[in-house]
Structure formats: structure tokens, C-alpha cells
Image 1 (cartoon, rainbow, N blue to C red):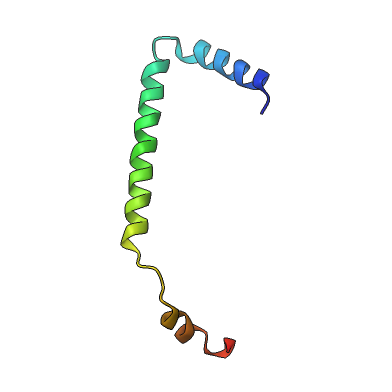
Image 2 (image 1 turned 120 degrees about the horizontal axis):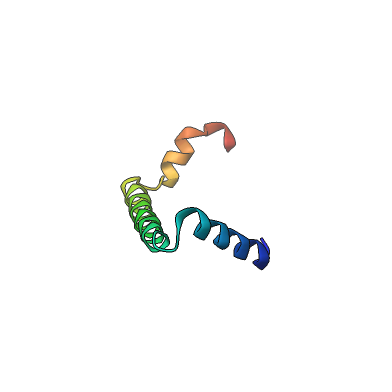
Length: 63
């Protein structure tokens, strides 16, 4: 994406939402991204990594 595309996108967003709503929208998006990252990390922490023995049991013909 070229810098000119970003400028056009920002201008369109200002026209659609107005300059007063943009900070609120950006804050909301930032909070949502933070929650999403937190949940993804928790999901990764909940799933234990597979051990080597488990991998061997799943594919005995690979030897």
C-alpha cells in the first residue's frame, strides 16, 4: 500500500466518521486488539506442546 493510499483512506475516514469520533474508534480498536492478543496467548498456554513420544505413537510407519 502506497503512502498516497493511506492518506486517501484517512481522508475518507474523517469524512465518514468525523474528526471527533476517530479517536474513540481508534481507542476501541486498540482495546479489542489487546484483548485478542491476550486471549490468543492464553489459548497457546493452555495447549501443552506434543512430546516426542506422542509424535512417535501417532505415526509408527514413519520409522
